[in-house]
Structures are given as C-alpha cells and as structure tokens.
Length: 255
Ligand SMILES: [Zn+2]
Ligand SMILES: [Zn+2]
Ligand SMILES: [Zn+2]
Image 1 (cartoon, protein in one colour):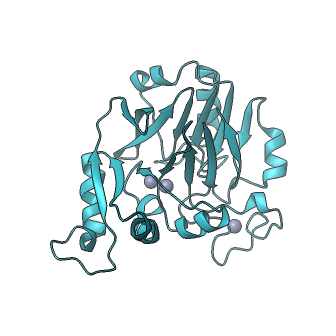
Image 2 (cartoon, rainbow, N blue to C red):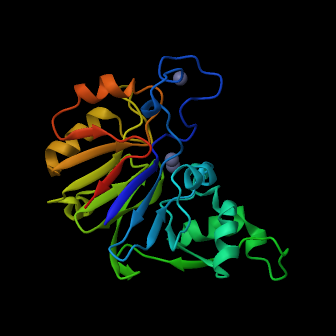
Image 3 (tube, rainbow, N blue to C red):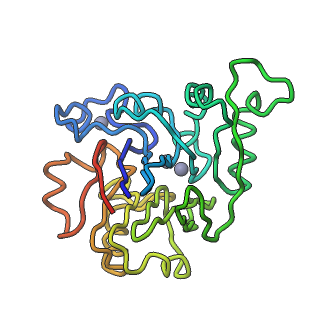
C-alpha cells in the first residue's frame, strides 16, 4: 500500500494569510503546507482519502489524483470536511454517491454542513454522499482492513485510522492507554504536532510527540498538522530524534 500526504498544515494552512514570518515567506516548497489530508492507495490500487478540507480541489489537481473510491473522515472541523462539495466532479463522473465513513456524530455534522446534499428534492448540481457510520472497531472495505483509533481533541473524539502496520492520527491532544495498545509494533506512526513549544489544549506539541515516540517505539514517526510556529523544515528536520521526521506535502510512504 501507499500513503501520500496531500496536506500537512494546521487549520489556517501555511503560509498564513498576511504573515511575514520566516516560515510563511520561505521559498522551500516543504514549508508550504495545505490543510491536512492523505491519500491511501490499496494493494488493488483503490483510493482511500482521509479528510477533505478546504484545499481538496487543489490537492487533487496538484497530485494528478483523478479518483476517490471512499473517504474516511476523522472529525467534523472545517479543515477536515469543508471540501466535500468539491467532490462533485468525481460523483458526476462515477454516477455514484460518494461513500463517506465516519462516526455518527460526524455524519450528522456533515448533514448540517451540507444539507442540500441530503435534501429530498435536490438541485441537479448538488453532491451526493452515502454515509457509512462506523464505530470504534475494525472494518473491511475495498478488501482492506481498517482499524479506527479513538483519540481526544479538546472535548471531542476523533478517529485515527490504522492500515497494516501504519497508523494516521491527526488532531489528537490525548490518547488513552487502551487505544495505545493498537499503536504498538508499528512500522509507521503519523501524528499531529502543531508546534514545538507552548502546550495546546487540543493538539500535541513536540514534547508530547517525543514522549509517545519513546513509549510506543514505532520504526518511524512522521509529524503532520503543523503550524508556522514549528520552524523551517530543513532546520527542524535535523533536530528531531533519529526515526522522527517532519512530513511535507507530496511525501509518499510505501508500507
Ligand atoms: Zn485540524
Ligand atoms: Zn507565519
Ligand atoms: Zn480539529
């Protein structure tokens, strides 16, 4: 399987509008971060999108991705769902409703955010989704076993997703010991890390991620959902402990 980072930025994206800091003005493409999302390609070349934020259209075009077979949603914050309307070209082409997998709370939020997609009498150009409510237990779709990992993000639960020996977790501020059991013996752990310093009520910062890395000992750990407060990619990458890396938009991992 393959995972490609379509975006590795926090909710405002990097550069931040109007910001003149060294990260936001960097010429290095690795310092430009669209909103966090990944595309997983299964062994049978099916496409699983995780999250569909405001940069979805640009991410599909930039990466020459032409299809999404299903989308998994982590939670309902706009930086993870507000691009769903831009799935319309894929829905029109396939002539099928787009399957969305998420928990029931996120499903009802999607209905509130996009009521016209679920209306009885729909505008002809409206998107169409097929909601699949999932719980915190493994499920199989597209011949691929997916294990949700429930993490805490301020006051809400968020689903991370594990495929084989890789887990993708974004927008976590806390992971319980029960859920950590699912994250043992991983080849790759992808974890959100908003900045280096200053604890955040909803997101891990670098010291939290280093503690989890030491505790769970995945072979590799990639940071994502990164803000402009983290620093320049090329400098910060060298400072991380061996085995830890900053993800960047366009990075691909085979697993
Ligand atoms: Zn987010
Ligand atoms: Zn900045
Ligand atoms: Zn969030």
